[in-house]
Image 1 (tube, rainbow, N blue to C red):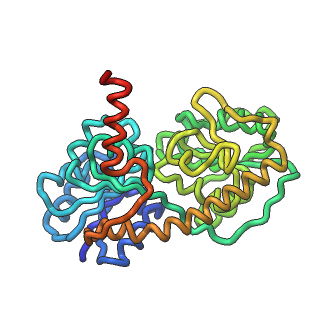
Image 2: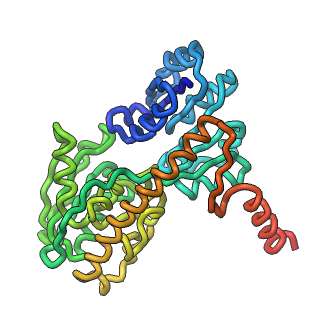
Image 3: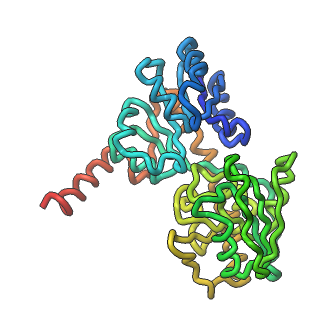
Length: 342
């Protein structure tokens, strides 16, 4: 079997989709194509011509719905769309209906349920990276944190993180000042008020250097208002760090507030500060690590289902998915009759 994998140009550099490509290669020959969805459509015309001129058995579009939309009328073959929540959360429902004959692979439950409610075919998966070796941490000293300033002009900005540091009693913060977009790279750092000691780094020559610095503090602040999967946060949880994140997908589908991390709402930092003591920190740290270890085991067991869906081998899978199939249709109809149709 031959599979075309069409991915986001940024992911070729970060490697965040590599796990999927390696998984697909266990059942097929995979040819990779990369585009920049943020650019003008004619920028990836050459890639489209390559795809039209080639013959593949399956087409997997990883966060590249715009190019898959242009290719749909050509009926190249079975198509599998993998949207990421950070870029599709605000997309109108009716836009997704054009993909009614495709199969979605959804890595956030909230978007999976939204697609199913519209009648689209979607299968939900929750990815967990290899957690690696366990790390010893101390919980009785000065508290420190790490924050990658990826979107300086977003709701998750450094001023917000510094305020939360003060509320949590964090005295040291390392800021990785490496925004995603060139236009944000001149955004000034806020003035140091003396309550939190700030150190700063920029791009590293080696990814391992980034991981060593990012993984050292006890707290890890999510860098964006919402995530597709949230690889950096998952790596932090595997590293027994306490993730502090907006209460938004995909991170809030991994983190349980005051159990395996801290979640806050759009208007305030809703944390019971009286509960943030050494014992609570240790409990959250260990729970985060345990979540990654157990989740990795579940993900590896679930890869057979994912590959079966792409192979279209006709196998039936028994899943405890409350949003799946005919049962979900019955529940929605009953809800309508009780709340709307009377």
